[in-house]
Length: 414
Image (cartoon, rainbow, N blue to C red; front, side):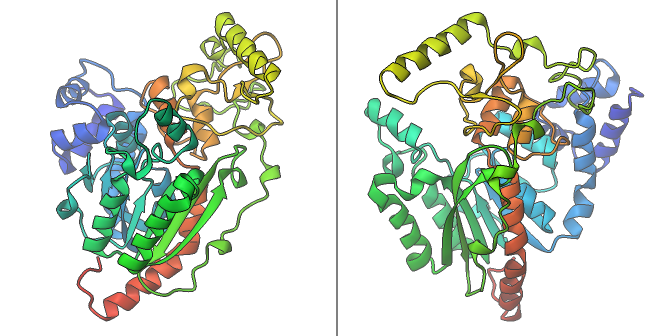
């Protein structure tokens, strides 16, 4: 048996979880666990934080003030705020295997995890709050444009993603949680001349009987990134909750210098990153994040072409004093929407750790996947502090509605 500190933590975890459960939570197979325990291979540094999360899960759950489910969870950007507000996750659903891995190492096991939620209403436990960042591609400007060009359906006509709202509808109808939070792209409100949004609101308000509010919120209130998303909040009973009660800091107060790696010797060394994203010996970002000469020349030619045609397409060059465009899931392809100017030579992409910071994730957040997958995950995520603030304002109303329903002994209350 290995005496490596992380291997010892693995042994402690196996007291509470089966080897299969532990392997699933860490995003590996059971044979990998066995090799770590035997000392055949050395466990990666990020496992320390992941195992701490796993081992603390039972104590966290016993203190919860309310329960929630996390649907289309991605890497848990919405969940973080509701964890902090005293909530306990009763179930997670996320179909992407790479996102499952990132989610599991950061939030641990100890609750139900379903890959594909479609057609599985009966597997959803009772809960107080439903959280869902349901897929936005059918409604996003980029997604609609691409599907139009390919002659493919979009919005509710999209057979694989557009109908996922109706999975949420079925869960809300069956479980009747006290509240819900839905998140999507800003374009959801104007898609199909407003008809898509009207259908959603009609379902939530008239068919399901929830008191619903919606608001477009720019993540730029919390991080130096322009990122507008629509948030839809509903309560099963009348409350005095108001989305306008959110405290949104001045957007002009945020600059990219707060998320960029610091080259003056003050960049923190993160054991779980293992120096992957920042060279502490050389006090610089690794060279692999600098654009190749061919790619940089191509992006400049592309921008010049559209500029001469009167279009605004092209790369986005930023400095520490700048704010950035919206980070997209395609950032791994060329990084063109956010390129960091460098004193000498070509610009560079953000590192995955900088992307995490741009989305409001703390440096303690573990990134156990490749750069390509990390870029996709952060580009698809939410600006986490938006939902921390939302959870702060919602929580007293969640608890009030829950208390009222419990006092009436309503059977569908968790």
